[in-house]
Length: 135
Image (tube, rainbow, N blue to C red; front, side):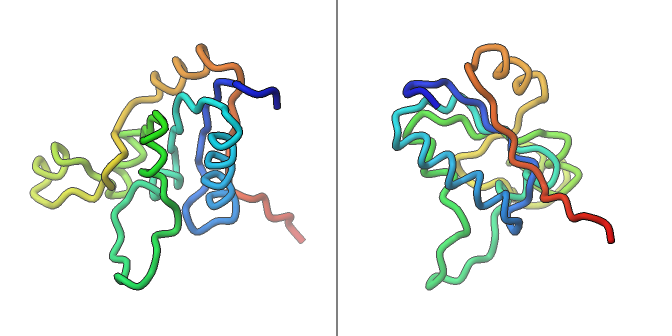
């Protein structure tokens, strides 16, 4: 990939999957190599990357997605997919009489934002669930 590419990353693989972990590693390496990540869009099971978790103090979270915002990365979570899976920002949590479950650094957004990102980026990469062959 030529240096200085403008990337959009679509993550539909959950945080416990191999591809979900590869997505974060790819983004960190792309930033290290000087590429710009316009947006990481989380869709389907991928929205679970944005959910707060009860992580013991002596354990590290699976990925440091929010740390990428310091490099200007927009961490956008599909609002419809998030709400279906219980990933709620402050506004939606108040409406439902519960607490926020959206991690700091992430925000809820729409599929229109993903489409707009594709229009302005030079490349887009999709990290999806692994396909398991049927026997």
